[in-house]
Image (cartoon, one colour):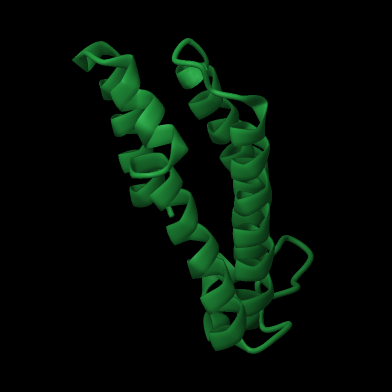
Length: 130
């Protein structure tokens, strides 16, 4: 195991001596749990402004597509360019919804900085996190 760690880098090896994409796998496991929760957060913030549950489900669906296709491309299970493009398109569509689409319109409709700040901050962090 020490030889594997020296050749491939410490961060890519598990305790069993198996090296490879374990870091990628666990990173995507984390994201598949936290990103849908962030989508629920967006819905809860905008619920007072009249957000429908369909907004939440659309964001969760798009984030799942983004993460699954991103993992397929990054883990080498498929062509990285194709799967990365699909993942990236899903990501940019989510950002569009949050800034200019129905979520952004609801935030503007709510009026006042108190309603715009949480969704603006969260969507900025979403872009930064990805």
